[in-house]
Image (cartoon, rainbow, N blue to C red; front, side, top):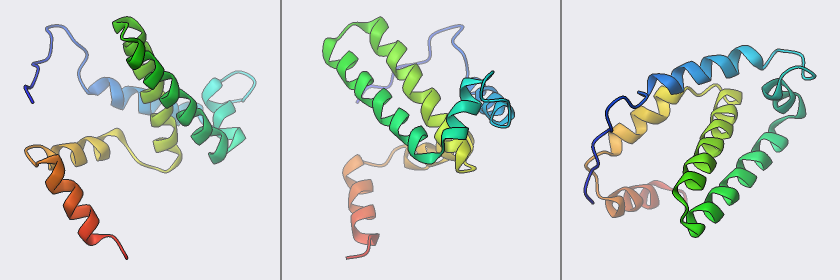
Amino acid sequence: MKRSSPAPNMPSCDVLDRLAAVIEDRKQADPDSSYVARLFAKGDDAMLKKVGEEATEFVLAAKGGERRSIVYEAADLWFHTLVALTHHGISPREVLAELARREGLSGLEEFARRSASSPK
C-alpha cells in the first residue's frame, strides 16, 4: 500500500488531544447545555449505539463514493469514538501508540498474532 504524505497545512494529531480534552471537560456539564454531557448521562449503551450508527453512516457514505460525505461521516465516527474512549479512560495517544506499534507489520501477521493469543 502506498503511503500518502500529509497535505500541507493539515491539522496534526494534536487536534485529537484537544478534542479529547474538550470531551473530558464537557462530560460533567449540564446535559441540557452539552451534547457530550447528554451522551455521558445516557450511559455506555447509548454512547456505543451512537458509535454504531456513525459507523453505518460512514460505510454508506464510502459506498456512495462522494468524498465530502466520506470525510464528514469519518469525522462524526471519530468524534463519537473519542467520546467512548474518554468514557473508558483511554486517550487518543494510547490508540496512536497502538497504530505506531503495528506500523510496518503485515495485517495478516497482526491478525495471526491476535488469533494465536486469544483464548480457545
